[in-house]
Amino acid sequence: MTNPCIICVAITGSVPRKADNPAVPITVTEQVESTQEAFEAGASIVHAHVRNDDETPSSDPEKFARLKEGLERHCPGMIVQFSTGGRSGAGQARGGMLALRPDMASLSVGSNNFPTRVYENPPDLVDWLAAEMRTHEVTPEIEAFDLSHIFKAKDMWDRGQLVARPYVQFVMGVKNAMPADREVFDYYVRTVHRLFGEDAPWCAAGIGRHQLELNDWAIGAGGHARTGLEDNVRLDRGTLAPSNAALVRRTVEVCARYDRPVATPEEARAILGLRASA
Image (cartoon, rainbow, N blue to C red; front, top):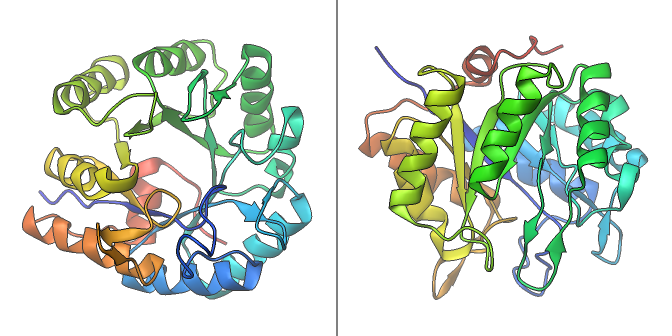
């Protein structure tokens, strides 16, 4: 039986600038064009942030609305996942775009350290974001920066706070948070299967130089993969990635090494239990 691999492309994020890599898409038009190329290369999920014209992070629902409209027009069937991360805004502004009903949204369920700051996700805000996702039928992707976040997701699922069985993404390689450690990764996989079922889908993201490493671990272990310029702006130490699509194509090559077909958007929706595309 085949086990298609879902590739998520994180196109922009809140940190990388044009000075880091000119290929980082900042405007809505750039983001749509970059995503379309990544979609055609094999990505079935787009993880999206929006930016102001000066490249600073934004949580402006109007920008998200224009981005969603462009993505749905140019990337038919692709799963649109909005970020509710803390770098883009404060408090409930982080979820102001959920009323647009994207297919998915990221949900960080606990706090942890980042390179120069604390990534704060207080319980009352986590509960509010989860409630907004339920109200607007948005499926959360749990961004797990720590083992405790996986257990918190299980608690929220047991309490009926989440729309569906959690889709957990391990984020590894952030300075001052969880390093890219293979034994920890393997334990995360076992923990997800123990808490959510042997057939529970999961994903992994590696930051910076760990991106390809985590792609390899996740795809080889039967999970799904995230790539893109948000997490890593290079193909290797001396080479900038020319596009999001280039990083997607590299991930497709890893899938081929493990004899895993790349999931189509329709297959990805079925694996994750999402509604059909419009």
